[in-house]
Amino acid sequence: MSLLPRSLFGRTLLVLIAGLMLAEIASLGVNFFDRGSGVYRLGAQQTALRIAQSARILNRLDPRQRAGVIDEMNGTNFSVVLRRTPAVMSAGFDEHDRYELALATLIKRYLRSQWATSVQITSLGRASRPKNYEAVDTTPLEQWIARHFYFILPGAYSIVAQIRLEDGTTAVFYARIPQEPLSRIESLLPRLLLNLAIFALLGAAAVGAITRSLERLAHAAEQLGVDPEGKPLPEHGPSEVRSVIRAFNRMRLDLRSYLLERARMLGAISHDLRTPITRLRLRAEMIENAESRAKFVRDLDEIDAMAGSALEFFKSLGSEPQRHPVDVAALVGSLCEDWFETGRDVTVSGTGRAPYNCHPQALRRCLDNLVENALRYGGRARISVTDDGAVLRISVRDDGPGIPEQDLERVFEPFFRLEQSRNRDSGGTGLGLAIARNIARWHGGDIHLRNAPDGGGLIAELSLPRFQSRQRGS
Ligand SMILES: Nc1ncnc2c1ncn2[C@@H]1O[C@H](COP(=O)(O)OP(=O)(O)O)[C@@H](O)[C@H]1O
Ligand SMILES: [Mg+2]
Image (cartoon, rainbow, N blue to C red; front, side, top):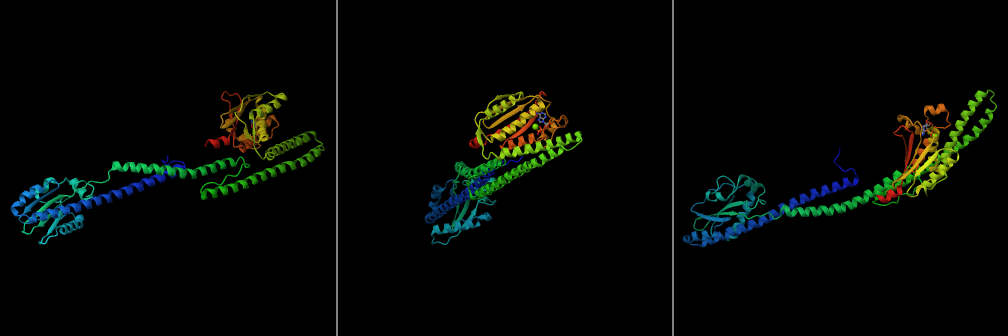
């Protein structure tokens, strides 16, 4: 199973938000390092100034007074000792050479010395550093961090600077360059969340607009197959979506004229078949052998019935170009009465909630076919209407033998009849269910057959979705 959201909306939003997160984290990182090194530079300048000023004061003082002043100067982050000879200093970290050089230049400038001097700087963290500073320095981990991220670790970067004074004494300064990270994760998080929220809102609105127009299109496509008479889809949304809608509307018109053309043609064929059938019927009278004549006439009747039902089907659709809101319970009621009047056992229960938008003649033909089957193969028909507001269901149940499970779908095929119906010579043409399903689908619905669980007959259920209410709900 894929972890990606299924909808275009979800996927696009996910990509946008993931992109934003990455960009935001990257920019936070850059900012963090950038600001960190800015603060570090400032600290370095301050330290250079302090070393230079201290060196100048010590240079002025009488050697006997120096010890007292040094006592006052020394603290945790800054201390100085005087030596007769310069200490041998190990080289600093390679990475910091440039930095140390810059620091030495800075100190020299701040010294403004007239006396010949040398300034030597090394970063701490190597083995042979002056003994007296060892206590202050760091663990190996801190040293590693200091080496690579010297501007992040608070107070981790320490230097030693040796300055030779005028009288030949060497002043050795130890300084920790003060450093506190400016940005903390705790303060970055709210910013990240705020950005995400803004972006998710805007992104959802933008992506939502696009996917909504696609949804409308999908919805229209779903209705198209069943109701070519519907209005064209309004061209809304971004240009790409609009051109899809335009192409779709064109296709819909083409399909509609194709469907109508097909219906007209088949209707015309069934209609024109009638004349030769009638002629054949007359000629059949001339067949002398009575048995042959009867067979011939029966075949003709069958052809006639097929042509007749095909013709009526296409007529029923062609004569009703528009749908109307219809009180389905009343329609079923009158259908039931008509059957009842011919002495058939048909009952109705239940009712629809609201008028249903349909082609009433076609819908009546559809139900008629179901009831006819129930009566013919099952003796009686019990119709029940249920309506949950989204789908209107009309089921027709009988007391007959039902249909073997494997044939429940096949009986919808045109001209398909079960073996015993053929033998019983019950007079159908095998088109009834095909026509009924065609009409159901024309309305966006469908028909399904199932055998009643207790073995008592067949249940044919016609389900008709209410597209209008679905559109409003979505
Ligand atoms: N209520 C039913 N009970 C049993 N069999 C049925 C029922 N409805 C339809 N059938 C079977 O499905 C076949 C196809 O039905 P249909 O398409 O209406 O054609 P027709 O009724 O003209 O034969 C029927 O011939 C019959 O064998
Ligand atoms: Mg039938």
